[in-house]
Length: 410
Picture: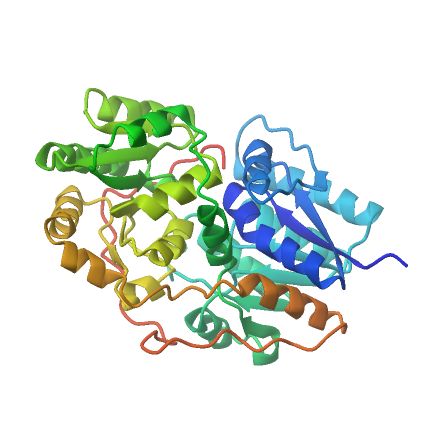
C-alpha cells in the first residue's frame, strides 16, 4: 500500500537547504512519502542545494518569467502548484519561510483544502517594509497554516500573540542548523575555483565573509557596504574577503565596480551550499543581510554583523552572537574593527552556542507532520535555552532615510 504523500515545496536555495533535513527524516521514519517539489522560482539553485544532501527534486515545475514582477511569479506558481495538487493530491503540504514560493504553495494547498504546514513559522520584524516582501508573506501564510513549526520560543510567542492556538504551534528548532552541520562536516574541496584559489593563497590571513542579497540592500545601501569593505581591507592587511554576489546582473555589476582594484577580495557568483557552509565554518567574521547565515554562523562560533536595520531573528541579538549595523558605513567599520582587534571579544560573542537549534529539528518536524495526520504522537518541543527571551524586546536600529526597495527578479 502506498504511503500518503507529503509535498515539500521549495523554490529558492535556502528553502531547499532547510527542507532537505525534513525529507531525510520523513524517509527515515517510513510513515509518509516525502515528495520534494521544486517550484521553478530558482530551479538551478534548488537543484544545486539538494545535491549537497544527495537529493534531487522529485517534481520540478516550469515557471516562465518575462517581467520579473512578484505578481507574475505568484500567479504562475499558484497555477503550476494547483495543477500538481490536482494530479497527485498530497495529504499535507510543507512550505518553508517567507518566499513567494511559500505563499503560493500555502494558497494553492489551502484552496484545495490540503493542510498547510509552515516550517520556520512565527518570525516577525514588525515592519512590513523590511524585509520586503518577506514580512508580509510569512504573516499571510500564518493565516492559513494548520501547523506552525516555530524555530524558537520567541517565534512561537509571536504566533500566540497573534491568536494562533497553542495546540497548532510547536517549537522544533531550525532545520538549517541540521543542514549546515551535516554539510560542513563533510569538508569537501571547494567547487568554485576562485574561492579555492583564494583560500589556498590565504597564508594564514583571517577570512571575512560578506553577503548582501536582499532588495533593501541594493542601490545606495550596497554602495555604503562596499565602501566599508574597502576600508576594512585597507586597514587590516591580515584579512581576506569573499563576497558571493547576488545573481541579478545589476547587483553583480555594482559589486564588481565597487570592489574593483581592491586586493584580497574575491567576488563570486552565488556559491554552492557546500562551499558556503565550509567558508562559514572557516570565517573569523561574517557581514551579512542573510537570515539563514544569522542562524548558521553561531554553530561555528562565528559572530555576525547584520547589514539590516531590523531583523526578525532577534534571538541571535539577545544571545550576543549578532549585532545590527544596517548599511551604515561608519558603524560597519567600527563594529568589525572592534572584533578584528580583539579575538577575545570576538569569541565571547558566540560562547553561548546557537540559539536556533540543536541539530534535531528535522526529526521533530517529520514527527509533527505525521502526528498532524494521526500517524504518531506529537514530539516534545526543542528544549529552551536559558537566557533566550520568549518576549520581543527592543532590537532594531532606526530605519535609515537611505533605505530603498527596488523591484527585480525574486
